[in-house]
Length: 427
Ligand SMILES: *[C@@H]1O[C@H](CO)[C@@H](O)[C@H](O)[C@H]1NC(C)=O
Ligand SMILES: *[C@@H]1O[C@H](CO)[C@@H](O)[C@H](O)[C@H]1NC(C)=O
Ligand SMILES: *[C@@H]1O[C@H](CO)[C@@H](O)[C@H](O)[C@H]1NC(C)=O
Ligand SMILES: *[C@@H]1O[C@H](CO)[C@@H](O)[C@H](O)[C@H]1NC(C)=O
Ligand SMILES: *[C@@H]1O[C@H](CO)[C@@H](O)[C@H](O)[C@H]1NC(C)=O
Image 1 (cartoon, rainbow, N blue to C red):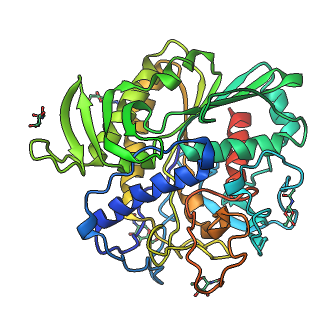
Image 2 (image 1 turned 180 degrees about the horizontal axis):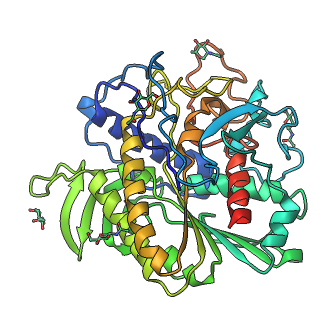
């Protein structure tokens, strides 16, 4: 498969580490907000307080461009991930009134977002057309099958979109959820089709230390060579899997291999070496993909790349916001350092696995949504993660938390399902 080669210019930030510190903070908060009262949030550990200051606004430079033109077709198959957002007068296949299961923080329509243009774009690959997912056809394909989404809150965002799309044909029945609604399973009874979301933000085994308010009392302990059994113990039940790492790796943590400390990220302990999150991310993906290639069970797997955020003029806690109302065009935006780094690790691990996996009959596909997501600064809830955020407040001075990472529903993430369906039908 062709990929976009990471030849992407960067936003300029004064300090990479400031960005990291802020980012993991945000993620903590975002997840906590996202889950509202349902979930107690895990650790937010900040070690670099003194270094945190306002980063300069990300610059959308004139000359910077995401270079997609260096692609040469290696085969005649169209690359679904290279394309543009084009106006879609038909709009979304569901709304807040036809889908009942949109979680509050993503229900931008209900929350009073004044503009709706963001829901009227569709993803158009350069070399072919991408039909909208046909829920009936999809459900028929999935008859008697089981599909699982494994990862963090972006997976929950994605599965919600799928449930909304499919609910136009049949309502999903909630068949299982844990106490905190982190792990859930639905069924479409007429199709005997099961969809699960499995909470495994690190994919590998992690111990987190938090009190009832979600305040962390100690660093995360992350075992890079042991997998999170939340997903591995169910793996054999799944026919289709979508799996991804992600931004939880930016959190401060102590890393273990073979039950021994091998280093840490942001831990500030004198006798532990700072080795950075990139090392951990690479190892964790390696362990994950090794499990997948070694397993006798061979589901069809989508391996998703990193999801960029769109905070501008600050971060989540320093007044960063995302109030654009139109997509970027190719060339108007640049991937930030962290996303570029994560994506590079993802592509390397994917390529390595593909080599090994093809001999073992593995169906592993890269689900490379980084670039198409990068072009959608307009698709996040922003302040509309809250119900009517400005009510009773002075619109110009109110300080309201923005979510510029997750996606409004309906919204750009719906196209991920169009792509998923297209890939399945081509397979
Ligand atoms: C990619 O394409 C651009 C413009 O067409 C060209 O300037 C650049 O050298 C190319 N880069 C590579 C790595 O081929
Ligand atoms: C749906 O969104 C509209 C605004 O677009 C709002 O007026 C309405 O109350 C919402 N309905 C539900 C059921 O969320
Ligand atoms: C680091 O020091 C602490 C406290 O002195 C000790 O408990 C811990 O085992 C040490 N860790 C390593 C990796 O040596
Ligand atoms: C976005 O918010 C900023 C800061 O509040 C404001 O200056 C700008 O005009 C807003 N842009 C849009 C498109 O609403
Ligand atoms: C994982 O790491 C091992 C040892 O470094 C290497 O041989 C293997 O190719 C890697 N696998 C993947 C999927 O990257």
